Length: 447
Image 1: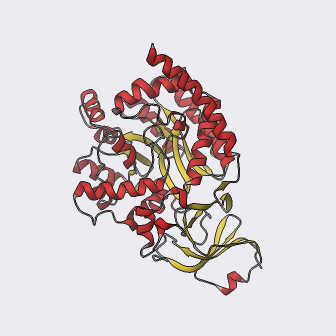
Image 2: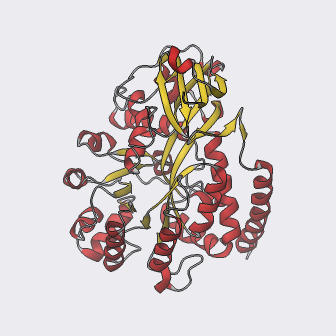
Image 3: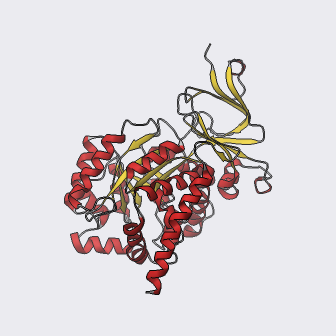
């Protein structure tokens, strides 16, 4: 008779699967060796199995862990450093100089742990990340207990930690080779910043590597009108068509933002199987534009939700991202029925997992899948009454309502207390780093 590691019982369960499209009242989940052994209504056989720990979930909502399809985790270090600015000025005048002066292996490690803490506390169990010093990002993720798809950032100029441009791609490949089998919770990919910061030769070379190694390939795409104009002036075509001409679009490519698209470009993304990471809060804050989410979904494009980095969002709470995504589409189309709550919830879970190529492993609560799940405390004024659980999740809930988080059958947060690391230590370290950044920023402004 198999022994369960956990039996979660008497909770309200949203599986996110087609087997149980509606909430299961007083349901149970049996977890064994990191995977879901049983999920469904009360089952006497499962209830009778020996178990190491029983979790009484009465009064709690159980759902799949949220999936963040695009972030730059260490940029928690720059949260609030430069706000209310256009993307070009924000990036070139503030963020790039800050990265050049203050990013090192130590700061990236602590900034990533801070991001992991924020995501765990708000119910995200998996995230995709593209940045620098990715080995330190990976070490922080491994310590945190989260699941992540980590992609070294590649540009056609020196970046933090890689002053020699010729080593940029080689360094990314070394990271992939070092980490692709180092942890069952960490997958690797490659991330080219954009079509205007990477030459056609770089883009083709990196994509060829990703195909050879069967890795996801991420790129910021059609994020701003300025990007479209720059690529058009340089290559005589738009960013999407440029990537298509270079044979970069396929079912392992993730287009981040994908805002400024015409109908034929949406068709190209659909025909090639390209997925999209939609970051509504960052897009709104930087005034980049509104992505054609409904049109992309109508063409069968996989669209997940992402937060982007803390410097342009300014938080990593996917509950807020769900609410923003739903409301933005409604006001944009002047139609309150579009992008309904159930659809947005799927974007933050199973669709997001599909964007990352992890849909067979996570994103829904199904037998055999990894036990990535969260418990939400329903005993809150803003979650009462409960007529439609999807509506409450999207329009009323926040990350602060998450009580317990499990990743791969391991509890990483219990009763809002992070298990794997000392949050106070992380906060102290980031505050120390931020004081250096602040002193230098004040000096630069006064000078």
